[in-house]
Length: 176
Length: 175
Image (cartoon, chains in turn orange, brown):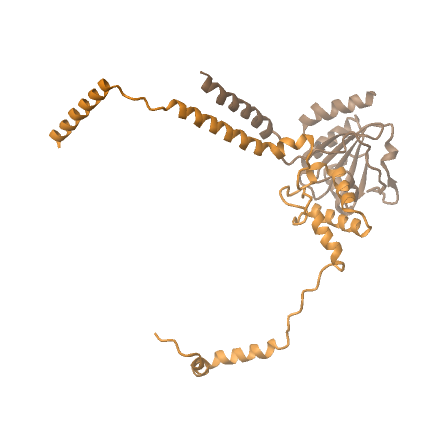
Protein backbone atom coordinates (compact mmCIF):
# COMPACT_ATOMS: atom_id res chain seq x y z
CA UNK A 1 0.00 0.00 0.00
CA UNK A 2 1.53 3.28 -0.96
CA UNK A 3 1.40 6.25 1.43
CA UNK A 4 -0.26 9.31 -0.02
CA UNK A 5 2.04 12.31 -0.21
CA UNK A 6 1.47 14.81 2.57
CA UNK A 7 -0.15 17.39 0.36
CA UNK A 8 -2.76 14.87 -0.61
CA UNK A 9 -3.80 13.93 2.94
CA UNK A 10 -5.78 17.01 3.94
CA UNK A 11 -7.85 17.17 0.72
CA UNK A 12 -8.42 13.45 1.09
CA UNK A 13 -9.57 14.02 4.68
CA UNK A 14 -12.03 16.70 3.63
CA UNK A 15 -13.41 14.52 0.89
CA UNK A 16 -13.65 11.27 2.86
CA UNK A 17 -14.52 12.43 6.41
CA UNK A 18 -16.50 15.66 6.45
CA UNK A 19 -17.77 14.95 9.98
CA UNK A 20 -14.21 14.55 11.24
CA UNK A 21 -13.29 17.88 9.72
CA UNK A 22 -16.28 19.49 11.39
CA UNK A 23 -15.16 18.13 14.79
CA UNK A 24 -11.62 19.37 14.23
CA UNK A 25 -12.98 22.79 13.35
CA UNK A 26 -15.07 22.90 16.50
CA UNK A 27 -12.10 21.90 18.65
CA UNK A 28 -9.89 24.49 17.02
CA UNK A 29 -12.48 27.18 17.61
CA UNK A 30 -13.09 26.43 21.28
CA UNK A 31 -9.52 25.72 22.25
CA UNK A 32 -8.55 29.21 21.22
CA UNK A 33 -10.14 30.48 24.43
CA UNK A 34 -8.39 28.14 26.84
CA UNK A 35 -4.71 28.94 26.98
CA UNK A 36 -3.11 26.78 29.68
CA UNK A 37 -1.85 28.79 32.64
CA UNK A 38 0.91 27.88 35.01
CA UNK A 39 -0.50 25.89 37.94
CA UNK A 40 -1.18 28.17 40.91
CA UNK A 41 1.00 27.13 43.90
CA UNK A 42 -1.04 25.90 46.86
CA UNK A 43 1.01 27.63 49.48
CA UNK A 44 1.81 31.27 49.31
CA UNK A 45 5.42 31.03 50.45
CA UNK A 46 7.49 28.77 48.24
CA UNK A 47 10.65 28.99 50.31
CA UNK A 48 8.79 27.76 53.38
CA UNK A 49 7.40 24.89 51.39
CA UNK A 50 10.81 23.96 50.03
CA UNK A 51 12.28 23.89 53.53
CA UNK A 52 9.31 21.86 54.71
CA UNK A 53 9.94 19.29 51.99
CA UNK A 54 13.65 19.04 52.68
CA UNK A 55 13.09 18.65 56.43
CA UNK A 56 10.27 16.16 56.12
CA UNK A 57 12.29 14.05 53.69
CA UNK A 58 14.68 13.46 56.58
CA UNK A 59 11.89 12.37 58.89
CA UNK A 60 9.94 9.15 59.01
CA UNK A 61 6.20 8.77 58.98
CA UNK A 62 5.44 6.77 62.12
CA UNK A 63 2.22 5.36 60.74
CA UNK A 64 3.52 4.14 57.37
CA UNK A 65 6.93 3.48 58.77
CA UNK A 66 8.76 2.93 55.50
CA UNK A 67 7.70 6.26 54.07
CA UNK A 68 9.26 9.59 54.73
CA UNK A 69 7.16 12.30 56.30
CA UNK A 70 7.28 14.19 53.01
CA UNK A 71 5.31 11.66 51.00
CA UNK A 72 2.95 10.14 53.52
CA UNK A 73 -0.78 10.77 53.39
CA UNK A 74 -1.41 9.61 56.95
CA UNK A 75 -3.24 12.05 59.18
CA UNK A 76 -0.43 12.13 61.70
CA UNK A 77 1.96 13.00 58.87
CA UNK A 78 -0.29 15.89 57.84
CA UNK A 79 -0.37 17.11 61.44
CA UNK A 80 3.40 16.91 61.77
CA UNK A 81 3.98 18.69 58.45
CA UNK A 82 1.59 21.41 59.57
CA UNK A 83 3.55 21.75 62.81
CA UNK A 84 6.86 21.92 60.93
CA UNK A 85 5.46 24.59 58.61
CA UNK A 86 4.39 26.65 61.62
CA UNK A 87 7.82 26.30 63.19
CA UNK A 88 9.58 27.31 59.97
CA UNK A 89 7.40 30.42 59.85
CA UNK A 90 8.35 31.13 63.45
CA UNK A 91 11.96 31.14 62.37
CA UNK A 92 13.11 27.87 63.94
CA UNK A 93 16.24 26.33 62.46
CA UNK A 94 16.33 22.87 60.86
CA UNK A 95 18.19 21.58 63.91
CA UNK A 96 15.56 22.97 66.27
CA UNK A 97 12.85 21.19 64.35
CA UNK A 98 14.78 17.92 64.29
CA UNK A 99 15.33 18.15 68.04
CA UNK A 100 11.63 18.84 68.51
CA UNK A 101 10.71 15.66 66.66
CA UNK A 102 13.38 13.42 68.13
CA UNK A 103 12.64 14.49 71.70
CA UNK A 104 9.01 13.46 71.22
CA UNK A 105 9.28 10.39 69.02
CA UNK A 106 12.82 9.17 69.51
CA UNK A 107 15.60 8.41 67.03
CA UNK A 108 13.32 6.26 64.94
CA UNK A 109 11.61 9.36 63.57
CA UNK A 110 14.81 10.18 61.70
CA UNK A 111 14.53 8.61 58.28
CA UNK A 112 18.26 8.02 58.26
CA UNK A 113 19.39 6.28 61.45
CA UNK A 114 21.83 8.50 63.33
CA UNK A 115 25.39 7.29 63.76
CA UNK A 116 25.62 6.44 67.46
CA UNK A 117 27.24 3.75 69.51
CA UNK A 118 24.03 1.75 69.33
CA UNK A 119 23.73 1.97 65.56
CA UNK A 120 27.35 1.15 64.67
CA UNK A 121 26.41 -2.43 63.85
CA UNK A 122 23.52 -1.23 61.72
CA UNK A 123 25.73 1.06 59.67
CA UNK A 124 28.89 -1.02 59.35
CA UNK A 125 27.51 -4.54 59.83
CA UNK A 126 26.84 -5.33 56.17
CA UNK A 127 30.21 -3.93 55.05
CA UNK A 128 31.93 -5.91 57.76
CA UNK A 129 30.06 -9.06 56.78
CA UNK A 130 31.15 -8.56 53.16
CA UNK A 131 34.80 -8.14 54.13
CA UNK A 132 34.71 -11.18 56.42
CA UNK A 133 32.93 -13.22 53.74
CA UNK A 134 35.53 -12.37 51.11
CA UNK A 135 38.35 -13.13 53.54
CA UNK A 136 36.87 -16.53 54.36
CA UNK A 137 36.37 -17.29 50.66
CA UNK A 138 39.97 -16.38 49.78
CA UNK A 139 41.38 -18.43 52.65
CA UNK A 140 39.29 -21.42 51.64
CA UNK A 141 40.29 -21.17 47.99
CA UNK A 142 43.98 -20.85 48.87
CA UNK A 143 43.81 -23.93 51.07
CA UNK A 144 42.14 -25.83 48.31
CA UNK A 145 44.89 -24.91 45.88
CA UNK A 146 47.58 -26.28 48.19
CA UNK A 147 45.71 -29.56 48.57
CA UNK A 148 45.08 -30.14 44.92
CA UNK A 149 48.72 -30.44 43.73
CA UNK A 150 49.49 -32.75 40.86
CA UNK A 151 51.33 -35.86 41.98
CA UNK A 152 53.63 -37.26 39.33
CA UNK A 153 53.25 -40.94 38.52
CA UNK A 154 56.24 -43.27 38.77
CA UNK A 155 57.13 -45.07 35.51
CA UNK A 156 55.82 -48.36 36.97
CA UNK A 157 52.43 -46.74 37.73
CA UNK A 158 52.42 -45.05 34.31
CA UNK A 159 52.76 -48.46 32.61
CA UNK A 160 49.86 -49.86 34.68
CA UNK A 161 47.69 -46.89 33.75
CA UNK A 162 48.50 -47.36 30.05
CA UNK A 163 47.75 -51.05 30.21
CA UNK A 164 44.42 -50.47 31.90
CA UNK A 165 43.44 -47.79 29.42
CA UNK A 166 44.34 -50.01 26.45
CA UNK A 167 42.39 -52.95 27.87
CA UNK A 168 39.42 -50.67 28.47
CA UNK A 169 39.69 -49.29 24.93
CA UNK A 170 39.70 -52.74 23.24
CA UNK A 171 36.74 -53.84 25.36
CA UNK A 172 34.77 -50.87 24.16
CA UNK A 173 35.68 -51.57 20.53
CA UNK A 174 34.47 -55.16 20.89
CA UNK A 175 31.13 -54.06 22.26
CA UNK A 176 30.35 -51.30 19.77
CA UNK B 1 34.63 -32.49 63.28
CA UNK B 2 35.89 -28.88 63.38
CA UNK B 3 34.70 -28.25 59.84
CA UNK B 4 31.12 -28.70 61.00
CA UNK B 5 31.44 -26.85 64.26
CA UNK B 6 32.14 -23.43 62.79
CA UNK B 7 29.12 -23.24 60.44
CA UNK B 8 27.01 -24.80 63.18
CA UNK B 9 28.20 -22.18 65.63
CA UNK B 10 27.43 -19.38 63.21
CA UNK B 11 24.02 -20.89 62.55
CA UNK B 12 23.20 -21.05 66.26
CA UNK B 13 24.24 -17.43 66.75
CA UNK B 14 22.06 -16.46 63.78
CA UNK B 15 19.11 -18.40 65.17
CA UNK B 16 19.44 -16.64 68.51
CA UNK B 17 19.47 -13.23 66.83
CA UNK B 18 16.48 -14.12 64.67
CA UNK B 19 14.56 -15.50 67.65
CA UNK B 20 15.02 -12.24 69.52
CA UNK B 21 14.46 -10.01 66.53
CA UNK B 22 11.45 -11.71 64.98
CA UNK B 23 9.60 -11.84 68.28
CA UNK B 24 9.63 -8.09 68.60
CA UNK B 25 6.96 -5.86 67.13
CA UNK B 26 8.63 -3.78 64.43
CA UNK B 27 5.88 -1.18 64.58
CA UNK B 28 6.50 -0.33 68.22
CA UNK B 29 8.39 2.89 68.60
CA UNK B 30 9.93 3.15 72.06
CA UNK B 31 9.18 6.43 73.70
CA UNK B 32 12.01 8.82 74.54
CA UNK B 33 9.78 10.34 77.23
CA UNK B 34 10.18 7.47 79.68
CA UNK B 35 11.93 8.87 82.71
CA UNK B 36 11.13 12.44 81.72
CA UNK B 37 8.50 14.77 83.11
CA UNK B 38 5.09 14.52 81.50
CA UNK B 39 4.82 17.53 79.16
CA UNK B 40 2.73 20.33 80.62
CA UNK B 41 -0.50 21.39 78.98
CA UNK B 42 -3.84 22.99 79.73
CA UNK B 43 -6.90 21.68 77.93
CA UNK B 44 -10.65 21.92 78.39
CA UNK B 45 -12.42 19.05 80.13
CA UNK B 46 -14.59 16.95 77.87
CA UNK B 47 -17.76 17.03 79.95
CA UNK B 48 -17.40 20.60 81.10
CA UNK B 49 -15.40 22.61 78.57
CA UNK B 50 -15.50 25.71 80.72
CA UNK B 51 -13.14 23.99 83.16
CA UNK B 52 -9.55 23.22 82.35
CA UNK B 53 -7.18 20.42 83.30
CA UNK B 54 -3.43 20.42 83.64
CA UNK B 55 -1.19 17.51 84.67
CA UNK B 56 0.30 19.69 87.40
CA UNK B 57 -2.93 19.05 89.33
CA UNK B 58 -1.91 15.42 89.66
CA UNK B 59 1.34 16.00 91.53
CA UNK B 60 1.62 13.61 94.44
CA UNK B 61 -0.59 10.99 92.79
CA UNK B 62 0.13 8.04 90.55
CA UNK B 63 -2.18 8.07 87.54
CA UNK B 64 -2.80 6.68 84.09
CA UNK B 65 -3.26 8.85 81.02
CA UNK B 66 -5.15 6.87 78.41
CA UNK B 67 -5.27 8.27 74.88
CA UNK B 68 -8.56 7.31 73.24
CA UNK B 69 -11.04 8.46 70.59
CA UNK B 70 -14.57 7.58 69.53
CA UNK B 71 -13.32 6.78 66.02
CA UNK B 72 -10.72 4.35 67.30
CA UNK B 73 -11.69 0.69 66.85
CA UNK B 74 -8.87 -0.84 68.90
CA UNK B 75 -9.87 1.31 71.88
CA UNK B 76 -13.01 -0.78 72.20
CA UNK B 77 -10.85 -3.83 72.76
CA UNK B 78 -9.22 -2.44 75.88
CA UNK B 79 -12.19 -0.44 77.10
CA UNK B 80 -13.86 -3.18 79.20
CA UNK B 81 -10.52 -3.71 80.95
CA UNK B 82 -10.30 -0.03 81.74
CA UNK B 83 -13.85 0.01 83.07
CA UNK B 84 -13.03 -2.97 85.26
CA UNK B 85 -9.83 -1.32 86.43
CA UNK B 86 -11.63 1.89 87.32
CA UNK B 87 -14.20 -0.02 89.37
CA UNK B 88 -11.41 -1.51 91.46
CA UNK B 89 -10.34 2.04 92.28
CA UNK B 90 -6.70 1.07 92.17
CA UNK B 91 -5.43 4.04 90.20
CA UNK B 92 -7.20 7.07 88.65
CA UNK B 93 -7.50 6.94 84.88
CA UNK B 94 -7.60 10.17 82.92
CA UNK B 95 -8.63 10.08 79.31
CA UNK B 96 -7.07 12.17 76.55
CA UNK B 97 -9.73 12.39 73.88
CA UNK B 98 -7.53 12.64 70.80
CA UNK B 99 -8.69 14.51 67.67
CA UNK B 100 -12.31 13.83 68.37
CA UNK B 101 -15.66 15.58 68.21
CA UNK B 102 -17.18 16.32 71.61
CA UNK B 103 -20.61 14.94 70.75
CA UNK B 104 -19.16 11.70 69.35
CA UNK B 105 -16.91 11.30 72.38
CA UNK B 106 -19.70 11.81 74.89
CA UNK B 107 -21.92 9.36 73.05
CA UNK B 108 -19.12 6.79 72.96
CA UNK B 109 -18.66 7.03 76.70
CA UNK B 110 -22.38 6.67 77.24
CA UNK B 111 -22.49 3.59 75.02
CA UNK B 112 -19.43 1.79 76.30
CA UNK B 113 -18.95 3.08 79.82
CA UNK B 114 -16.81 5.78 81.32
CA UNK B 115 -13.80 4.56 83.31
CA UNK B 116 -12.22 8.00 83.40
CA UNK B 117 -12.06 10.17 86.47
CA UNK B 118 -12.02 12.89 83.85
CA UNK B 119 -11.59 13.15 80.10
CA UNK B 120 -9.69 15.95 78.44
CA UNK B 121 -10.40 17.13 74.92
CA UNK B 122 -7.32 17.32 72.67
CA UNK B 123 -9.20 18.32 69.53
CA UNK B 124 -6.25 19.24 67.32
CA UNK B 125 -3.94 16.53 68.67
CA UNK B 126 -1.27 19.03 69.63
CA UNK B 127 -0.90 17.70 73.17
CA UNK B 128 -0.78 14.19 71.74
CA UNK B 129 2.13 15.34 69.60
CA UNK B 130 3.96 16.59 72.70
CA UNK B 131 3.47 13.17 74.25
CA UNK B 132 4.74 11.37 71.16
CA UNK B 133 1.36 9.83 70.37
CA UNK B 134 1.49 8.15 66.97
CA UNK B 135 -1.46 5.81 67.26
CA UNK B 136 -4.52 5.27 69.38
CA UNK B 137 -4.88 3.82 72.01
CA UNK B 138 -1.78 4.56 74.03
CA UNK B 139 -1.49 4.70 77.79
CA UNK B 140 1.03 6.42 80.04
CA UNK B 141 1.82 5.55 83.64
CA UNK B 142 2.79 8.74 85.45
CA UNK B 143 4.24 8.80 88.95
CA UNK B 144 3.79 11.14 91.89
CA UNK B 145 6.48 13.50 90.65
CA UNK B 146 4.83 13.78 87.25
CA UNK B 147 7.44 11.62 85.52
CA UNK B 148 6.34 9.21 82.77
CA UNK B 149 7.35 5.73 83.83
CA UNK B 150 5.81 3.51 81.18
CA UNK B 151 4.09 3.84 77.84
CA UNK B 152 1.76 1.18 76.53
CA UNK B 153 1.49 1.25 72.76
CA UNK B 154 -1.77 -0.26 71.51
CA UNK B 155 -4.62 -1.68 73.56
CA UNK B 156 -3.94 -2.79 77.13
CA UNK B 157 -4.32 -6.52 77.46
CA UNK B 158 -4.98 -8.36 80.67
CA UNK B 159 -1.48 -9.82 80.45
CA UNK B 160 0.16 -6.41 80.23
CA UNK B 161 -2.09 -5.10 82.96
CA UNK B 162 -1.27 -7.90 85.37
CA UNK B 163 2.40 -8.32 84.56
CA UNK B 164 3.55 -4.76 83.94
CA UNK B 165 1.10 -1.97 84.73
CA UNK B 166 -0.46 -3.03 88.04
CA UNK B 167 2.82 -4.06 89.69
CA UNK B 168 4.42 -0.80 88.56
CA UNK B 169 1.49 1.26 89.81
CA UNK B 170 1.54 -0.48 93.19
CA UNK B 171 5.29 0.06 93.49
CA UNK B 172 5.02 3.73 92.54
CA UNK B 173 2.20 4.27 95.00
CA UNK B 174 4.31 2.78 97.73
CA UNK B 175 7.15 5.23 97.21
